[in-house]
Length: 288
Image (cartoon, rainbow, N blue to C red; front, top):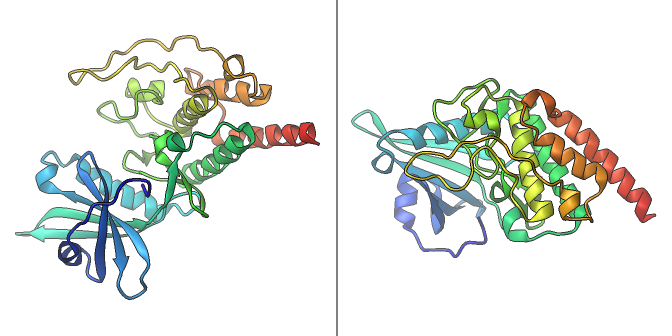
């Protein structure tokens, strides 16, 4: 989020929410939340504070998401996953009216902003993302919303996955369609149980876009309109190599395997990592 233009925010307000911190700027605003850049007064270190207010969340949906983000962030530790440190609750008349989530401050460009085209560089990014997702799966969680703008190439700090608000336990079934249409897995659209292979599909669709500049044809076609999705069958797609001849055969096939309609026919994230290593090895031999 460090690419956004800072907007001044109230240091007194932040101090009331999280004692010991001073507001620096508003990083951005999203659905039901505001992200602040804050400074710890004693150490001088910067953090990101995610603020969700009940007045902006009458249905409690974003309250649920921020608590889920806290839970997953405490359960999973990985260098490619944004660190989450503390969750502060503000109460009025014994009811929680505001949540503030203290997180690692990230500076850099999201994958959709970076405009990477070198296949070897992209392969390195994909490998780091898959490693973090594999750690989540080993701990019993699915990210459920991997996409280019939830992946940051941090200044001097490698690759970081962020936004765990849609995360859930392995085997979870959500009561409504949640995910990003251009990267969503079929089982998310059909409200079926989610597994690690849900993240495999999301990652596959993300890789497809990065390597081709085109969106993989998911089961949601076009934009959401009037609260309803246009749901159809996954259409046949050209392989990444057919669109971009620079994509190695092994990587192109892996992307298409990740995007298979049936979760049972997709590789596990561990298998994805093994195949990344094989492609990297093959590319190294070619360069030599």
